[in-house]
Length: 245
Image (cartoon, rainbow, N blue to C red; front, side, top):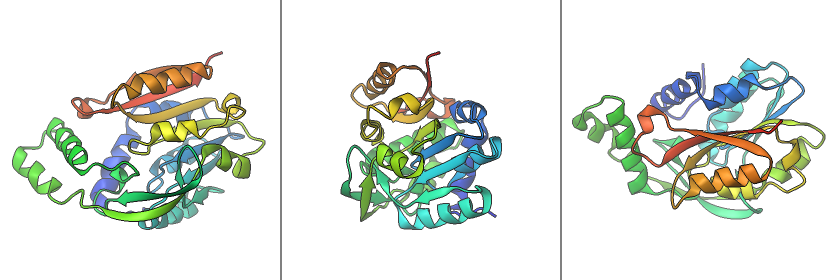
């Protein structure tokens, strides 16, 4: 039994994990000696996939929302041997920041939550998935009613220094609802060479998709992008970047 804040959301997220996408490609390249770093882990489904695909990999996760973190911690204890769950947000520099948690849509929570934009993206996703407008209105009503909390923020490099000092990072996964550039800017120059792959969800606002790809290319990666058919018409894209050989 998987611990979750919303069974419907967990089923949707697991469906995404089960598809042949960039997360699966990154998981297939993991080695047992690697560390997989999961920023924006939510309840831990991608962490579970990494551990299941590559037994022996060490999975380090970060999730700041208390209720979501409680589920993450329980799931990792059951399904991710040796996993490290951290109750913390991740950004460009350490500190404390306001965070919007959506109790009914935990995966959309974040530092840059935008209720109108999140409602619209969800409606497009549901419409692309074949639902009618009546059902969509019913599902999205008050879906993004948020609660403001203060959360501790750290950086990727601080996490690596404490939990993966001498290890190669098989994948850095980033899914942080518009804070993806903040997370990537929190990787120190000395740490980039030991990261072998990056999978990041990008909200393509003001040219951000190109900016993320350019940043990764500048650090020695070859980046490719995709947008799932269910997300066509939204700002959501995925980037998979692997180190050039």
